[in-house]
Image 1 (tube, one colour):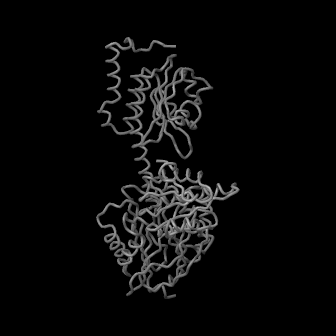
Image 2 (cartoon, rainbow over the protein chains, first blue to last red; image 1 turned 90 degrees about the vertical axis):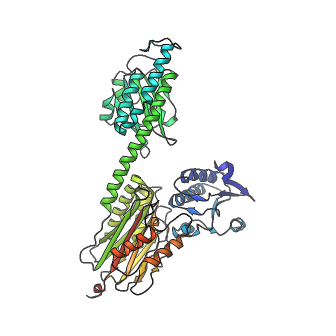
Image 3 (cartoon, each protein chain N blue to C red; image 1 turned 180 degrees about the vertical axis):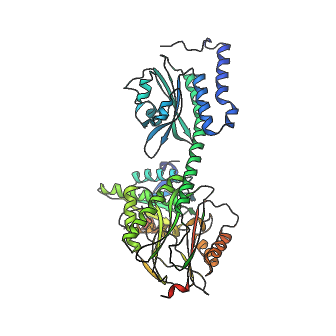
Amino acid sequence: MTAGDDQLRWESGQAVFRMPAEIDVTNANHLRAALRAAVRQATSVLIIDMSATTFCDSAGVQAIVDAYNQVEARNQNAVAPTQLRLVATVVRRIITLVGIDQLIPVYPTLEAALADSG
Amino acid sequence: MQVESAKAAAPGSRAALEDRLRDIQAIADAALSRLDDQKLLTELLERTRAVLHADTAAVLLLDYTSGHLTAVAAAGLEEEVRQGVRIPVGRGFAGRIAAEHRPVILDRVDHSTVLNPILLTKGIHALMGVPLIARGRVIGVLHVGSLAQRQFTSEDVELLEMAASRAATALASLMAQEDRVAAEALQRSLLPGLLPAAVSADLAVRYVPGAGKVGGDWYDVFGVSSGHMWVVIGDVTGSGLAAAVIMGRMRSALRAYALEHDDPAEVLARLDRKMQHFEPGALATVLCAVFDPGLDRVRMCSAGHLPPIIASPGCAAEVAEIPAGLLIGAARAARRETVTLQITPGSVLCFYTDGLIERRGQLIDDGIARLCRVVRAEPPEAACAAVMAALVGGEPVPDDIALLMLQCHPSALQP
């Protein structure tokens, strides 16, 4: 499974990375690598879609923070910066608890994340 | 150049096949499994050296943090272990094997092919090495050497790979045991169960390693010269020795900053900068609570940590309202905010890590609500026991749990 296969897709020109149902130490390393690949491929927007995610522990948080830092590093030298967005429903509480919503805008649905023109 | 080896049997002959079978049996011998990991490694090296008619055999362990290979066991090459030879991944003979994840054969051993001076001074003329792989990751290198000129064959490589697979299992288990013992010792040494002298409060604590493995959870209680008492609880992402080591560093740094600054937001901001500089990539949630000398007021700041539960006498317990600050290590210049809460005498404050309330298939808020229903203004030992019974019971916990219960006494109000 790589970001090129089933996790990363394109919707109206925006990259959407679908996160699995459960994220923990068993799949977080793989996910981090796949997210990094997604960051490299993304253009104007990368949406991390956690709408199907029901469990995310600190290893998952680490993978998301890593993606944020990858985007930040890339944007430093980029003419056109990439915007990172996050969709979270069930795991929204953990995302806000650790303050990730202060780094990445969080949306309740994928539609809302896609529709945001900012 | 095909050099005549000690194996005299003609290739393909019945005798050669029997030799080969005996060699395989020497490596695959089930009796080896009855040895402990260290003895198994030593015996395996001896047998590997014998079946391959080699003069030396060595196992090197890969340290991912430093990117170096270090010799941990050897036969005929004991000085390599005793002198603590370190080979950078990607360089030299062993370094190349670790970097390329594949066998390497050298029939010319000199400064251009080998980095380790011991191999050169020993007079080794041919080398063959394979990676040690455990759970898909290279964890080290196994190599054999010959003092005579010789060409190792693909059959030799196959035998060495068989030995490597057994060595990798033993080595992985050995490392896991050593890490576990070290991490447990570190955890124990860093978890105090004592209040500073002259504080009119009672304290009770619990620490339970998750799934038999310690992690990066910690708590700390200490007084500073101004008379303030600090209560800290935190959780470093990850588990095992690596997390426990980072936890120890964070705890020390936080104590040092608390001697200089009274504001928990300021202390957490400094801790964040320190972590991002010295431990890039590490993440942790931390909550600091600074109690006034009279224990009637507490100032708190959270870096992504779960909010404490406060139970005042005669009232239902409540979740302390603290702004969720960004966790430590995530990004530069996070906004940190300290909030002040009044404490009714006799109140119990409950600090905890996510292992206590997080369960698969349950919402965090449901876990916090369950905790709230159990915490009461009662002596901390009783409160801890009640919480552990209700939220853990007899279940094995997947993640480690740290729990700290503090009761502020009414007498604290009296000057």
